Structure formats: structure tokens, C-alpha cells
Length: 262
Ligand code: GAZ
Image (cartoon, rainbow, N blue to C red; front, side):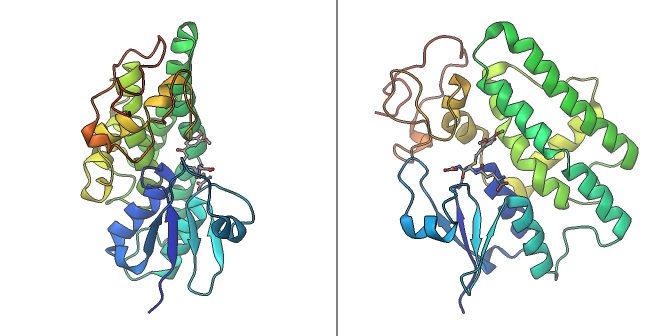
């Protein structure tokens, strides 16, 4: 039986959204996952399928039709495999879920802009922007689920969307010393439960801190900090064989060999 193919980058948070959904549905085997190495030029055959765009994940259906954008793929998979629903069925509850999902862009941007900032004088402003994003989520949870842990009784579509970002933001803890303020206990409870859930274990803190090292030097998506020849995103040497990077991100980047990349 042919299966849909997911072209993905294993460490990409947008791809992890779909892995969490499939794990919650117990349906990982319904999809064939094909890994793409973003540090190498993109396969022209895949580029033709995506009409020249390079962002992943991309889902190719059995008949060759293409779906892009993680939130669109997420809802497609939910509709296509309805046996174990993850999204809310009731229209108002579905709307509540989607109101919270609508906050993901601002939240994601705040965290990435914060870790990529290279001006120590602006650090506090980035931290404040991050806290304002957590405060919005905290307020929403206090409105819709004040006594619960998740938005509804168990992890749903909203948790699929945000959990991968909570995992990436381990880099804020490590490189910025930033944690959710204790004045926001509701979002902290949600955050901790999302990360502790068995369906969210595709990446570890150690993997994120090592692979995303170059983001702390302002370089995303495989770009190189000055003086370096290999991205922290390369697949070899494997991250588990590299040392933990220094936490202080404000000087020049450590060398390839200091990072275990040589
Ligand atoms: N909106 C798309 C989706 O599917 O939701 C975003 C997909 C995406 O950006 N994928 C990245 C990609 O394939 C990998 S993960 N890049 C390779 C390429 O050649 O395009 C990127 C950001 C960002 C936050 C995170 C990431 C990231 O900005 O982790 O900006 C580019 C990329 C806040």
C-alpha cells in the first residue's frame, strides 16, 4: 500500500508538530518520513514538487498532490485520520483551540528573535517581549481552563502546535538564562506538562542546545557564524558526541573544533 510521504527536517519544530499529532493518534506508521538535510543543496525533484519553495515540512499524497505549511498539514491529517480525534469536535471548543493556535506566530517570533539578538543592551527588551507572550497564553488559559493542565482534558491540537516551540526555547534557558516568570503559574503548568508528555519526546534538551548553537550567534537555518566552516546543524558528528557549548553567547563563536564539529 502506498503511503503519504512527509519530507521533513527531524529537528524542525514545524515538523515535530506533525509527529506529535501522529503519536497522539497512534498513527505514525500511516506516513513515510523522509529526512532532508538543509545544510546541503535541495534535490531538484523535490524543488519542482514544491514549486521552488524550500520550507519544510511538505506532505506528498499517494497520487503526488502536495500540501505545505505545518498547520495546514496538521488539520489535513486530523481530517483524514478521524478514528482517534485530537482536535475538538464541538464548534465552539474548536474555535477556542483555534484562538489559542492563532497566537503561535507571535510567540515563535519572540523566542527566536530573543535567542538571535546580538546586542546585550537590547537583551532585557527581548526578555520583556517574551514574557508578554507568555502572559497572553497565561491569560487565555486562565479564561478557558483555569483549573486544568492542558487547554482541554488531554493534549489536543493546541498542544501539538506549541510543544515543539517550548522544546526549542530550551535554548533561551541555556543561552539567555531565561525562564517563565513565577508570576505566570498557569502557563508554566501547561508548558511543563506539554514537555513531560510521552508524545513530545522526539527531541531532547541536549540535542536542541547543541544543534541550535548558531542561532545564539544570530545565524539561523544552517548559516555560519564568522570563523566557522561547519554549521551546528550538521548531522555528523552526531550531537551526542559533541561537548555542551559554552553558555555565554556574547563573545565570538567558539571554533568548529571547540564545538566538536571538526
Ligand atoms: N510556516 C512554515 C510551516 O510549515 O509552518 C515554516 C516552515 C519552516 O520555516 N521550515 C524551515 C525550513 O524548512 C525549517 S524549521 N527551512 C529550510 C529552508 O530551506 O527553507 C525558522 C524561522 C523562525 C523560527 C523557526 C524557524 C525554524 O522564525 O526552525 O524563520 C525562518 C525553521 C521565527
